[in-house]
Image 1 (tube, rainbow, N blue to C red):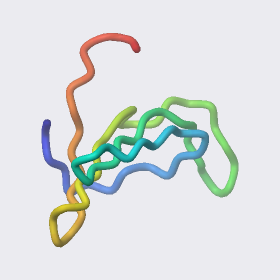
Image 2: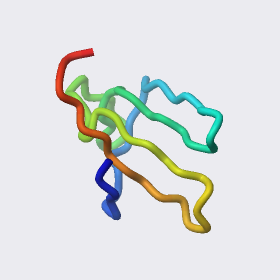
Image 3: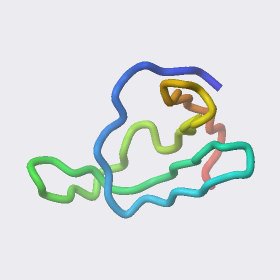
Image 4: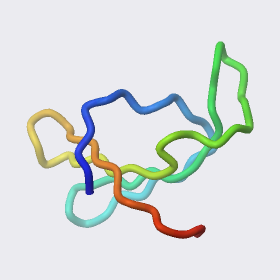
Amino acid sequence: MAKTSSVIENRKGHTAVLVSNSKIIIYGGSRILNNIINNAQVVPVMFVLNMETEQFELSVPPVTSNI
C-alpha cells in the first residue's frame, strides 16, 4: 500500500469498515462539491486509515480489478 499525505476528497454514501488491527477501510461513495452530491466516482475509490499511529496515516491499496 502506498502511503499518502494528500487530502482525500469529501464523499457521501461510502462504506467504512473497522478491522481488528485498528484500521478503517473506506470504499466508494459520491463526490460532494459545494454541498451538492455529484455521482462521479471519488478518487481514490478505496483507502485505509491507520489509527495506531500518533497522527492517523492514510494509505491507498492497489485496486487491480472491478469489485
